Image (cartoon, rainbow, N blue to C red; front, side, top):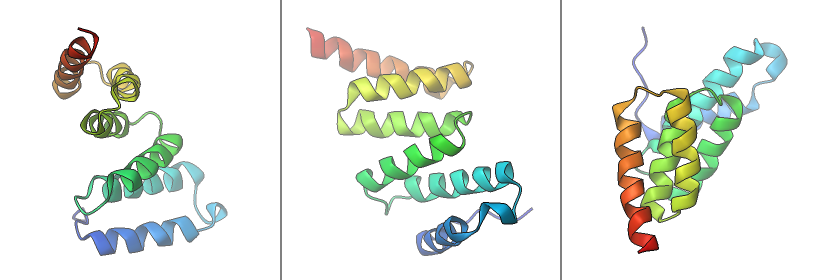
Length: 120
């Protein structure tokens, strides 16, 4: 099994290659999954700006909407940026996709605390 890429430049290079690949060259579902995963890895890299990360994660979600980690990381990013309503929507989706994840429920709890403070 190949090791995951961690170098940000190499991730961006591979993402560019995937985005240039014709969908007719590959089975679409595998292509979409690979492209979504590559976008996800670039988005969560610490060198990626929050705006770029949001754009990449939203594109990844359109390709692989059944992947709870994409929704979860979008929600975490929105919490960090203070967009609590957007975070709630993405955490709700993540919880529907993976209802047994303790990480998702932990962040739902943290978000609920921040929402309660906002409405006090």
